[in-house]
Length: 278
Image (cartoon, rainbow, N blue to C red; front, side, top):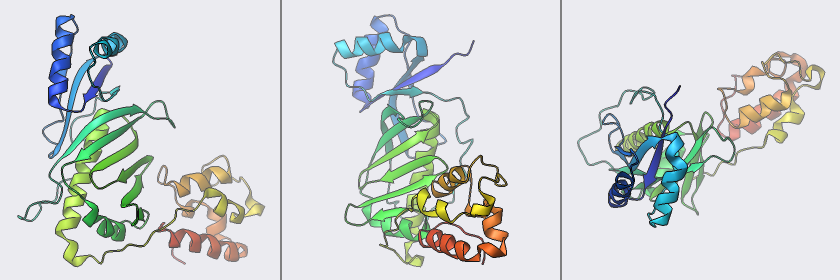
């Protein structure tokens, strides 16, 4: 039998410790859950306990008026397992010192995944134009002061002092992604003198904008590995499973599709997507 563990987040360590005292007095085996030491600059005030106790624990804490930030699966991967090697930062102070995961919510689009919110120790609005210059597929909203990007199926939105992330696998996965995000923000800020900032707002095209231009003569040919042309279009737009428009071989290789190819490539290139060399 799999020992599924659940993590319950709190807004701060004081509320977590109050909850732990209540649970221990009631006979629940709740232990403190912390971010792995390998994930520098990231924290979470949380408790971990067996999944079957979740209902009873939430009921008890609600009765005691404890402020909680939601639950999610703990995750079983080793800390740092999916992290890239850290690049040493210059000796000046980083822009973003600390990230704290405060809220765990169910993912509306996929019940197997979670959404999280995290607070930032520092205002990161100044770095957003530089991130926008580096990540062509990101969406920068200068008036709303937000920057949104996707990594696989995970969508992340940066605000001045908080982060919202959707479709993380579990709590450990979310913490690892937040640690990499902090590193990327600080590295970009440290190298800003060599980056031309961009306030351009790229609008993500809709799958139905490119779908009509996929070759009708090869409709649903499945050479791309997808069941339908529309399925490929959706995955290209949302950058799912590493799919690119280059997977549509008829569009990219058939001389008769040159006009359609130019339209699709132009649309995607303007939005920052990778397209095959012309």
